[in-house]
Image 1 (cartoon, rainbow, N blue to C red):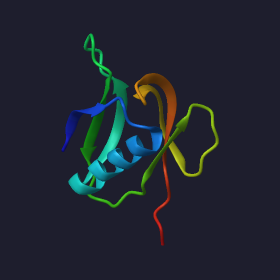
Image 2 (spheres, rainbow, N blue to C red):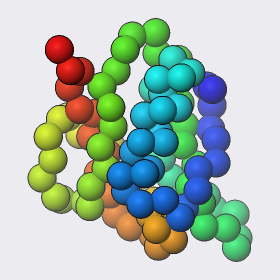
Image 3 (cartoon, helix red, strand yellow):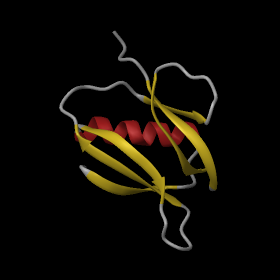
Length: 96
């Protein structure tokens, strides 16, 4: 789905990365932003997607500043396991 969608703030980093990757692959989209939902009383994130006709590698999420493979696509603060956490989102290379 192109646009911004709510995403649970209770997911672990690996589960969040898997969910966002699945949304990209199922909907032929690309993640462009991940932010904390500013609505009072909610612990969830907002993920923004654009059209992407090309196949992309999976996403990986780690704590901000931690080393990871792939290309960093964004740094942000998001809810992870119910707490606001500074994270980096990486795009992993396509498997050959």
